Length: 431
Ligand SMILES: *Cc1c(COP(=O)(O)O)cnc(C)c1O
Image 1 (spheres, rainbow, N blue to C red):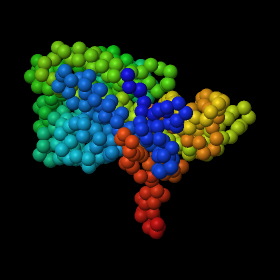
Image 2: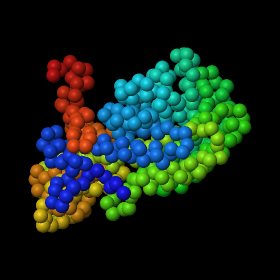
Image 3: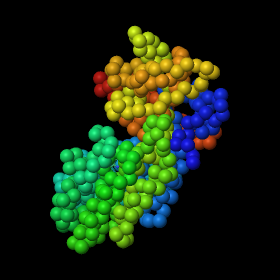
């Protein structure tokens, strides 16, 4: 079994590596904070996934919002991946990598604007996942205006409960996403009569960081029932999109076998879809492909004591990786260099931002840290930089992609010029 993460101490006494690349070397060359991703692991996860589904026609549309780095999109495009986008900006990213990839793009999201629709129609994307009757009307109007046909799926809300954080659960009737599955049949009837609209799929996405395959299969079974009704109504449904959301284990102790997880997920979905003939399965994994391939490398600025508590202050902060602050998410933290006989003590690992929510870990047992030490915050490849901000006028970190024993810069560190440009030009202040 390959390890869940590419971040390892290859031999006892050695420092932490990303595959064959020592992280100390990357910190020296690119400075910290720094996002480090393993290209090898991303490819491995993609292959695991496609292998698990190989017995049925399918297309894996990587969810761009998990990590939208062009360097990663290019890597996945080369593997033949499609892309799940949720904005015109994400489509622009995909088109910059490969204009021809448009035919592998699915466009999700509850608030698509007219300019975003026009861009996607002209690029010739594969399918729109439509989330409301109002969106359907607007899409019809835009399609006529730009003289294209929009292939659509309705994103249905299957009313399935999935165990995850409430902020990333989306498949219940009370959520803002999708169209109530009980009303979908009528909306498809309306859709087939709208000019410029070709209904040909059904989509669903029940949430994120879901570790059990069962809720996905439950949702798929409801979608299959709807597909049979629609086909009986004469609507040619040729694809079912089961969304993304397959989770990983963030805690070190938890058992996690990515291959077994992907296989169980595939087994249950393939079984649920079995009654439907001539269907292409669309999948939208994000986190599962990229989360564990990434780490946020950071330097210890200070170690300070307030009363009984010890704080390790790092040069990375919540603006770089917001998951702990936003979802109380757990990330493992490893020292890059392990010192002989160093004692473990409970510390809070915190960033420099002026918020008490700016922490990476609380009361975590870590080997005694000193100023200048390097720490790696693991499983930061998904919803890390893509959810980052410039809060406190902090420049975003650089990103590097490691392949074998080589590392390539895929995003340079931001400069103060990058941050201030939109204001300096508006105010006519010379930079
Ligand atoms: C966020 C999202 C995904 C990806 O979710 P993961 O948990 O990263 O796999 C897929 N599809 C849609 C519609 C999404 O909003």
